[in-house]
Length: 184
Image (tube, rainbow, N blue to C red; front, side):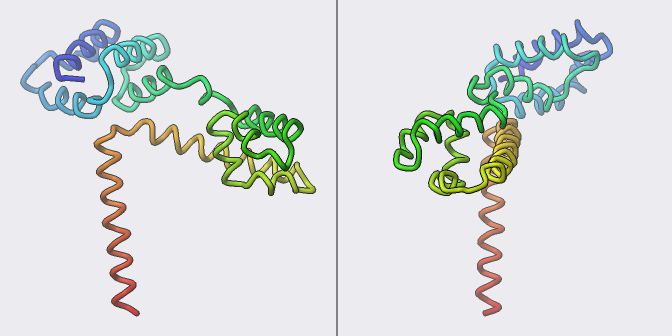
């Protein structure tokens, strides 16, 4: 989104929330508009506008940048990403019953992508050989929920911020490795 797009969003928000009048003094509004444009740069205007309108219907208070990003993530989400942990476990049970131990690739292909990823992490053969599926079910559901939450949080970050965070983490990792070599 551009700064002009943000100004259009602010006009919509001001119509819905009269106290939101951020554009009253354009000189004071410039840093706000610039920040919003930077933090929403990766989002097409149409998606942001739909997110704002959806938010207006759901909240009596004006949105923050985080609210807009959350709404856009919700609107643009793949239907497979809406599967809850219990439904995902149902996919695993169906695959266990249908494909069994000897056809792991077919079993994984029958699952939604996130479910298949968690099953790969746990190990298809480990799941198949388990004597207590209730324990495996609990572990699967916990892993699925954690992974889903992490994906949703990551989806809220703008790509440039993700890249910056990754670079910081890589520098930190190198510093720890270098520090470990000096101590040895």
